[in-house]
Image (spheres, rainbow, N blue to C red):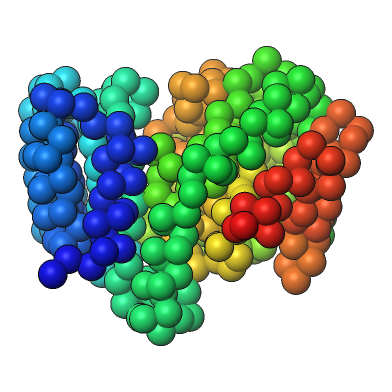
Length: 370
């Protein structure tokens, strides 16, 4: 018998996230574990008159393919994948990889080849198709969160099946305020950063593209970022973990970058020119996610957090920055993480992780949970 929580999650993914319609083709990509959710999605997609298709990806095999990839091989993949993307209306990706570091030893140049050739398809899928990405509740995820498997599963389903319609409504005043904002200042331990968001759209994320969800994102005007930011959560990119990342900006560009692995950090930031500019600024509000677990789909939604993203801007909030990199780095501003403040046009909006602006109190955890 199917776990009713999985059935509820499948309903949310199909009806709220990708809004599947009759006769639409849906790709369900299963990366590792999560077969029970994939099967439930197939059944429920058929119930809605849609056409489901399943693609199974084994991370260890994908690693072997990547170790020897070439531009010629990537061009063939591009030709095949483009037809699939054009034929399908919606994509659901279930990430059930047991080892988050499976690709850690794939050389940077191999990754660059694959990402560069396939980038137009990534942009096509991201910008012109309905899609959602979620991770599956594995024991390895529970271990990263320092939780028992049972406790993590309960946490996972609380986070993933909350009332996203209510969250979306609560975001409306913040979106309106950000639409009117020019200057942003962020201060906190090791951080004093200023930039403009004038003229850049602001996008509410309440279950449509990620599960779990709970953020609003925009992008800084590309050349407007100045100052220093120090991140207080572990961040992982290209299967390498980084701690204590510190970035210093001059006129939008990262001119100095350090971490526990400064060499590797700068190798990634030097993949192309756009990797040293910021493509996204976002505020996280999910009331059930309070602590980092080295899983960006969760960490970027932490209540009282923000993330600042070197690399590619999203089309919906485009500041013109282009890169094969899109690296969400998270800072938590609640008191137990050192506190901090966010100001819009010299008005204090959020202090120590809680919104203090009267119009935004509905986004604080006690209100989103109730």
